[in-house]
Length: 197
Image 1 (cartoon, rainbow, N blue to C red):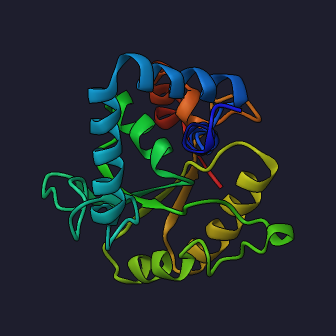
Image 2: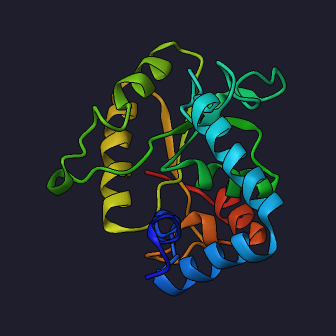
């Protein structure tokens, strides 16, 4: 409609979550009409981030270093691991400000229909951390969806077999809710009132 390059830019912006055809068109036209410097900076940062950002060797969150800032922080409690589905959930809990342990990021949830099993979620890597004998409590903060619950129960069974205490976030997070959209006060309450499985 606008020409090959502009149409490709609009189509490329649609990969972002929540961005439909009209929003992508508005963004593309804004960048080209009113903020070419911002567009160039955005393009540069996307390229640099894609090239330099990888996964933390311990918790699997996004980082540009071998270990993320949380895993390399000696003040964090290594005996507590909070398991989350994605980096956005980790950031949501961090913003709440009350958790002082470490994390493990699954990068999804069990979904056999989509071909996502324990191997894709790095559960073997998590089990190795639990076998080290350092971890005394595993806090399961997967989303309160059917898949999140199934994932939590699967991990809980593995952790209990190793003698690790397992708890699940509870009050305050609505069923079907996703952690990245929950406010800090609610997340604090959920962490403080977790229950054993």
